[in-house]
Image (cartoon, rainbow, N blue to C red; front, side):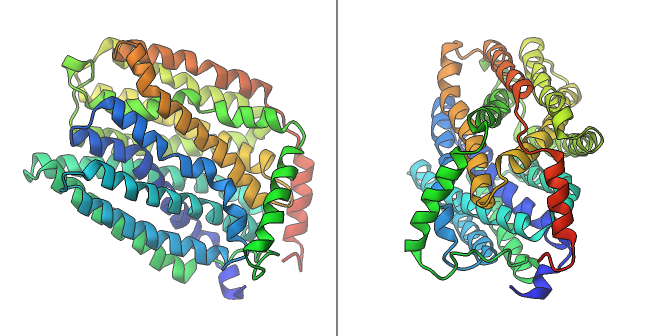
Length: 440
């Protein structure tokens, strides 16, 4: 490990690392749906096919041990960022083609696998470079930057396409080509920055031993994971925590964009982008900081149920919007901002629960990948059935968002039942060990 990299201050690389994780994740899972909506693909096809692109995040525990014998965590992060940059450029050049849907989906899949791989090793760099004490200190910043990358993708970039379409008179194809090329350039920029700033991360014991060494590690990581106390209940907590939000993530933008004749609010891309990007970003940041402050004051164990309420109760906003059908964009923006605030506040609890309760042990990087894979399974499951649920609701948004309220009850129940096998004393002891001289 290069010492000068290991000693770099976390503020030089943690914000950019987690921005670079959130941006492609939501580009694949959410922005792709808006692209296809603008290009005339049906809601049912959008929900079905874009939801399958969450599978790389679901399946990433299967290949995470095979990253350990080859290269360093830093190498994998940077390689994946440049691969995603190339993939986004390829998506851009697919859009004018007659078979753009299938071709662009193929490249989005490649971007998805690269992004999921980056998630594994980036979290590994963070957890093996930053002390337990500093992990708690930077957890709010970490989560905020990941979700800021997500909000930038679904907000500012979408808003820019609306401006290019409405003000510059470009076709939707050309608007999205520009945005995809620009997003690819941003990912390449992250790769170049991380060449200078990113620590190497802890070198795996499997490093240099070849793929054969990964098979026993894969088996042991799986066996040890399911031997953790109360693991099935913890996984249920992780899976259901954002269950209702999964339906909103997939159909919320479609509802805001659909014309009023179809039961939507009839916004254009520019308005949607301003709501998600400007107002939504501010609301999310305030919520994330509030969540971090709340956990710091109360501890995760005592605040977890309240954070779950903060995330799920604001789903009432979409229920209200689908019934009241307001026409004032400021009113719509304020109501969506309330949901974003709750999402920002509640997501802090979700992330910390996975990192502090599910992941600890000898395979911390792989086990954290397991936990985030289960979280991705929520998005895959809710997204995959959301089109079917929308059809069962008679393609009526008011009925659909009534269902979402019902789907938001199990997360609250499981948060109340959540086990905390890792107590505060264990973390304090580990923090003292890592902060002592010679700990590294």
